[in-house]
Image (cartoon, rainbow, N blue to C red; front, side, top):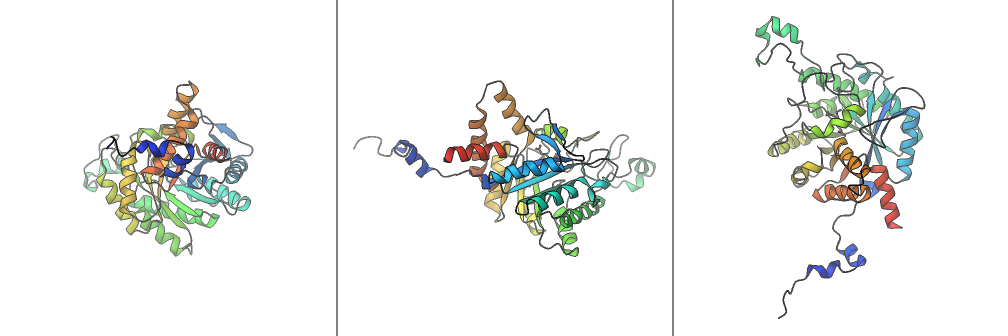
Amino acid sequence: MTFPASRPRRLRATPALRRMARETALAADDLIYPLFVVHGQGVRRPISSMPGICQLSVDQAVAEAQEAASLGIPAVILFGVPAVKDPLGSENFSDQGIIQQATRGLKTALPDLVVIVDLCLCEYTDHGHCGVLKDAGAMLRTPAADPEGCWRNGDFQIDNDATLEVLARAAVTYARAGADLIAPSGMMDGMVGTIRAALDAAGCQHVGILSYAIKYASAFYGPFREAAEGAPKFGDRKTHQMDPANSREALRELALDVAEGADMIMVKPALAYLDVIRSVRESCHLPVVAYNVSGEYSMVKAAASHGWLDEQKIALEILTAIKRAGADLIVTYHARDAAKWLSAASR
Ligand code: PBG
C-alpha cells in the first residue's frame, strides 16, 4: 500500500473540482444593505470612519437602494437620523419621522425591495441611550423608590417597560409606512412580544420581526455611532447588551425571542462571534442573520487603504466565513461591492 491512501488534495486539483467540493456559496441573495437616512434633499454626507458609506437624504437613499436592487440584493435595513432629539425620542413614532418618510419613498420606488427598519431609541434620544431613562433626580430624593439600589449621583437606569411602550408605538408607524420587517435592536426584555402584540392589534399581522436577539456590548460599533449619531452622552450599554464573554446566555435570549414570536434572529457582531452564530443556527429553525458591523468594515477599509490587505479577497473571505458558520443572511456595508465582485466572478 502506498501512503497516504486518502489525499484531500485530489479534490483541490483544478478550479472545476474545487467548485464541486465547495460547501458554502455566497450570493447577492444573502446580503442586506444598511442605509443611514437623514432629512433634506440631495444630501450625501460621507462618514469618515466608514469610507464608501454616507448619510443619505430619502431621494439619495432611493437611488442607492435602486443600485443595490439591480445588483440582486434583496433587502435594505434603515437607520434614521432625526431632525431633533429629545428625552423620549419622539421623532421615532411620528408619521413624518425620517424613517417613516424613507420607508414610504423606498416602497413607492421599489415595491419588491424588502425594507427592514432598525428600531431603537438611541438615535432619537438626546441622551443617546437605547431606552427611556428613569428620573435619577427623583430616585435620589426618594431612595425607597429605588428597589435595585443602584442609584448614585451620575448613575442612570433605563426603564425597560416604559421603553417597550415607545418601541410598540414606533413599530406601528413603521409598519403603516410599509416596512416589511421591524428589527428591534435595543435588547430590552420583552421587546419582541410587545411589538408583536402592538402590530397585531393595529392590523399589521403581515409585518414580521427580525429580532436583534443576541447583541453584544461591543466596541465594534464605534464607527456606526458616528454614522447614526447615536453615541450615549454618558455611561455605556452594558446593562442591556450582552457580555462578550458569554455564549450560553445567547441561547437564553434566543429561546425568549422565539417564544415571543420573532420571525428571524440576528446575531451581532459577526466576525468575533462565529461560535455564537454556529450554536444559534443549531438551536433554532428560524433564519439566522449575522450583522457584519461597522468596526468590522472599517478595519478592512483601513488596512486596504494602506495596501496591507486585499479588500476584495478579505471581504469575500469574511462574508463566506460568516455564512459557513451558519448565517443565512448577512447585514453588511460591503453588500454593494460584494454583489459586484460576485457577479464579475460568475461571468
Ligand atoms: C442601535 C444599533 C447599533 C448598531 C445597529 N443598531 C449601535 C449600538 O447598539 O450601539 C451597530 C451597527 C454597526 O456597528 O454597524 N440602534
